[in-house]
Length: 519
Image 1 (tube, rainbow, N blue to C red):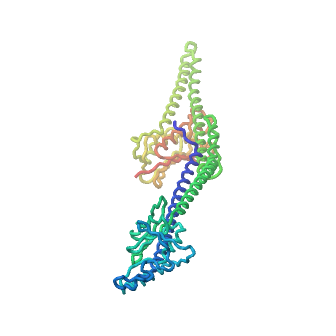
Image 2 (tube, rainbow, N blue to C red):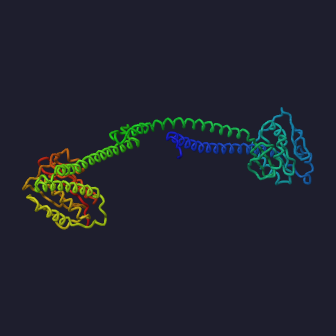
Image 3 (cartoon, one colour):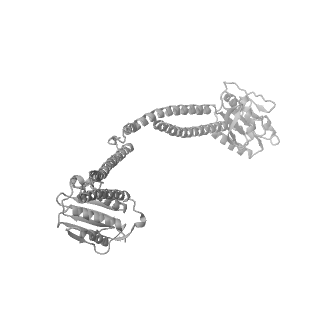
């Protein structure tokens, strides 16, 4: 048999699982949103860097072509780097230039608007002559000054050499031929966000912003979420365990009380439990069930005791008479009288056993015996069976029409005969006994009324129980064994009906049978 965890631990585990699921969802959402925000910031920063470099590099005026204006060959921008404020350059065999400059030299302030202006100016001038696009002389000093930052920069004019701000920026040179936009690149094992910008004259710039800080922020956020998740799970375990223990404390009390309930102590109850929650309602239901069980066990004990007494009495009487019987010394008439008395007691015991069997089988009426029964005809048949036995004032009040019920005709006749004879036993000669039929909405009521001695109020709740007699002092021959009304109720209930009684001592009794009507 599989061993299951206590309920409080299962509640705690379920709570932790739910909290962890929520933390995972929330944490993943926070990380994704933070990652997107950082990516957007890095792309924006890289784009600004690329466009700022483009604004610096594009401020050079385009020079006329040597074929068209040889006098301009001596112009300060003929080589693309001015002689005033120029920066020394180092060009390697790959055609990549890394400029150097005096750190005290002032740099121009780049502006995105200047790139547009210079572009417009250059475009206007190119319309007057064929021109060669070169980099602005301040590009070199700008790149040198930016070499101290973490951002990698590279620029190249059409058909010109690429210029970078530091050695690692060489990895950007192949990207200068790509289309503009942003991308993620690995440079020397580190992650960068790269932006490519290009103006209308073909000058292309690239800026790579390192992702180190962004990755560090994401890592710190993940560690913080893991720490918060661990603390939240631990706190959830403690709170869930304490809450479950508090919530289940009534169940512990109920368990200890229920363990004290045994067959000999059915008066014990598992309640009361304070509150109006599910556990309190469960307690009320269990207590009600125990009350019913107590009543059933008590009724069973009474039945066994009464049945034993009822069966033992005729046996004792018969045995006593037979033991003192001496046919040789007594006259035949006395012997026959003793024998007849013993036989009568044995017959009474047989009738008692038969009625007990009838009561046991009363709730097992098979469906094949159910048929439509005319209630008026049923009442007449029952009254005919008892009318001539005793001197009573019999009243039969049938209903108009033909009220019909679905039932076992013989069983219903036995019920009415039993009620009528019971009324006869409790009324005086010339007393009134009425049998009345009252059709109702979807039902038919059969009412038996007498004007006899009535039933004591304390017996009304148990009048239909087995071995209950209205007069305990009445002899068994006159009052029966107390099974008649129990048999009546069993028969009526087996046919989906109800039977009730109303009575006041000295004012007779009224028994009402209600059965569902059929068309």
